[in-house]
Structures are given as structure tokens and as C-alpha cells.
Image (cartoon, rainbow, N blue to C red; front, side, top):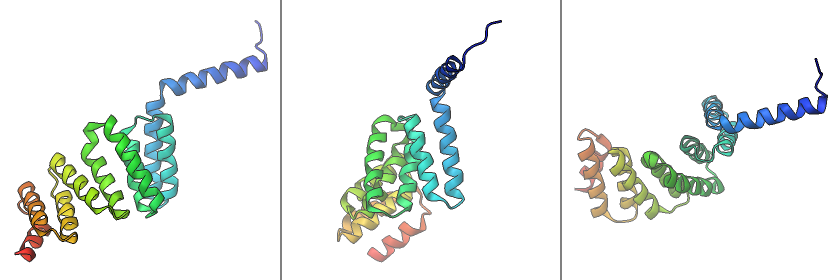
Length: 178
């Protein structure tokens, strides 16, 4: 039996690991997202962000990693993080139309943090239209109201009630506007 030299064993191991990384990058990214969730839920948002960033390095097309990273970046309340979240959500929207409502909401929250109310209102309204989620329409209505556009706010609140006739925040907002 012939022995394999140490440099050759190292080369075989390196090639094997590289092949495994390429073949299983989606699974590795998913595992990193799970680790990020665990860290963030445990109160360590910064570690969670690092795991999500690593997941995106393994699989740049992971919509779930992009969504989670956007959301956790927003929790840090940093303007640079909000800009990064907008860029990530915009990029992920092109690749993952199935996650459009969530990514639009992420982008809307980031725009809201940057005081880009018009863009945030449009993104929340678009997310609401896709997901039929009255919360997003209500947020759009609040932004319209803050911008001094009660007619647009009423329309958002009415659409929120169309999506859920029992959605109390929209009902209360309409009552105040009457």
C-alpha cells in the first residue's frame, strides 16, 4: 500500500472542501440563516447580522437571507444600515418576486428611517396590494396623513379595511379623519 504525502493529502482535502462548498452552498446558507435567527432571537442582533451576511456570501441569491439581513439591519437604527437594507431589498426584489411583499416592506421601513416618506408610502402600499395585509396599507396611510394628504390617507385606510374589515387601527384612523 502506498502512502500519500502530507501535501497531497492537504490538496485532496482542500479540493473536497471546495467541491462540497459549491455543491451545498444553499444548505450552508440556510444553516447560517438559522444560526443568525438563533443569535438575533437571543438578543445578539450584531451576530445575527454577521451570520446573514455570511449566508449571502455563500449564496448571493438567497432571498430569505436578504430579507432577514434587511430586517435585522433596521433594528440597529443606523442610517448606513438603512441604506444597505434599501440596496439589498431592491436587489433581492429583482431575483425573488415571490418575496416581493416582505422585501417591499423591508425597503419601506428603511426608507421611513431615512425620512423618505414618499418612497416608504409607495412601498408599503405595494406590499399591501401584494400581500393583502392591512398593516402595510395602514402604514402607508399614516405616512400620507403625516405628509398632509388626508384624501390619500383615507384611501389607504379604506383599502386596509377592505383587506380586513375588523382592522381596528384603520377604522380608528378613518373615524378621526371624518
